[in-house]
Length: 277
Ligand code: DGL
Image (cartoon, rainbow, N blue to C red; front, side, top):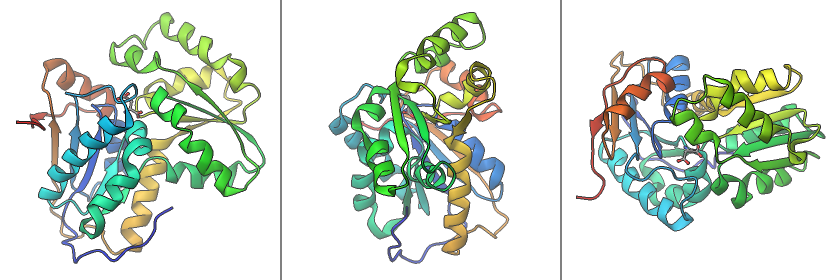
């Protein structure tokens, strides 16, 4: 849920800044671009420090502040933390740090609002990195809804490397997915939250596992909808007709650039932007 704060006067043609531990957050950027093609995007992938899912909270917070400085220097009107692990570890700190300089969003609150509306009194599953699951942030937020939702969480750390290594197009994928989803923790769920930016890429396999009997909740689409609402509510929609996209990474390799097509749906050019010089 957003807490309205007084924000300094902004040029509405300024970009939406998104950041993630790497290129997985491009699934969120893709959903944002699809729903809001009139908006400019500046994306920062902290490829020098991925994965965030195994890092300490303190480390993720330090990276997040560095990245926010980059996005603020580029006058982003909204900073969207397009990573579950960073949303868990650094959202409160980033919001405080950014203050009135930009709106700040995470990928968790829009999902919590959605399940509060659609899945009250039901058993809902959540899969994500160790950082996301062990933090218990989803559980706390769900309990605050007081909607009678029983959240069943499971850390699924093998899924990110499996997707990154492109092992999600063969039967190893099905075996790993089945091994996780058949665990007792996820028994009888009515919906499953994909609590990691990489997981939309394996949504069809997950749907297949559940034979379409469980709603698979892809946060990228829900987050994009929520961003649209935020822009409209605060008159921040870009009406200038000028649109640009920039994609930065803190460490450049050719394989990151090649993988962008997988996550963003089209090839993008990555610019190297070292965080510590
Ligand atoms: N982007 C991270 C997330 O959504 C997954 C990858 C990582 O562990 O850095 O949790």
